[in-house]
Image (cartoon, rainbow, N blue to C red; front, side, top):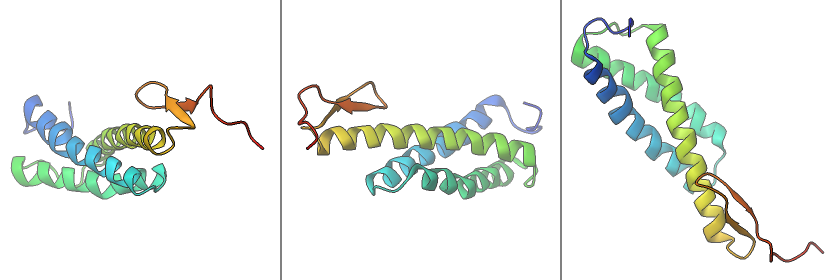
Length: 119
């Protein structure tokens, strides 16, 4: 990774994936549990990407304002947040509307075969 001059791959993976990704997963889950839209989860990752960039700067003397690294890290956080959001939303739909929907994979739901017909 050419944007990280002072860090090893393990440091990059730990800060970006473990710390930042863990926060992104929890944020995506929390946003889904409050029935907000997935757009909120995407927008919430912009400041989290800045925080991850700051941790790289503070702990490993990386450049703080490095646009390429910020974009890559933020895209990773957005992906983690959106996956967590969708998984949580699928669980919500199946759990809350069990008579209407059933699971369709880990990220989706579908109308049950025995669901009541529309009036």
